Image (cartoon, rainbow, N blue to C red):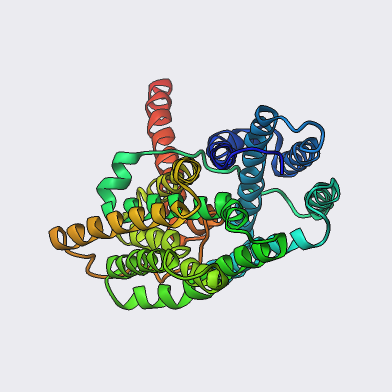
Length: 397
């Protein structure tokens, strides 16, 4: 409606995920300084302001800055919530808590698409409604009487460690980011370019998320019984086939196509996280998992940018052509990896639901995360004791 190109729309989406990446590194330090409650309140205020400011000035570069701030704020809110969950649950209920949390996120993402039908998208009401929802999120957190949890672990991004631990998981996370980031960021633009109205676009986007939500648990359980790399390969291959079919069928069946496409590709991140967990040791579990999350976020920043440039240059059909090329290339690479390296002999833990937004929670709520932190604390205590004893002996003599 503002006359911006699909390439500019892709840049706006990519910058959002760049802010997402920045937040992963910066927010843990903010929480350690001011605490979870204050940090959550500040981030909701910042995000509310960034949403409302969208209606002040229809300038591309102004919106670019606001999208960066929004990505930074939303990942901070996720991190605060997830670290709080981690501190409150016991090992006996960790799996069910994470599954419930992930389902809530998926339902929220799907319903959020349908909210576009509540008011005209060319007015300020939808921005006001969004800012109201974000502000209300701070109410239960700021009024809680429970004690604040321990600080959030600082994020690290060891790409070589991630690749060394599981090349297939690293490739899967990158592919998941490229494809899912493009769906979230460019799905609406694609719908507009092929002639869909707002109602149809919102339903199309909601169905793509619903497909991923419904397929994730069956695919995860299947991966618990077989080589997870084969399940990842199947998702990539089916996604490539559906992307190819989308180029041949009329736009009237786009709803079914996007549902099946989401079912194929939206589970890649959770499967990759499970695969990396199978190969990670207790000593580097958090580091590998966090690195995998960063890989996914980097892919989410790259995907919309590249896909939007192709759509701008050649047309909306390149929304699916680019996905076909990415998924086919990734599937061929996974076949090569399967042939050159045997699978892990066993799965240390069962598959757990996760989205890009809840990936950090999947790490923090894994019992191995607690074991890793406990071992670090014991090592520090041991070092301190060894450092003190010689001083005591010297004083006695």
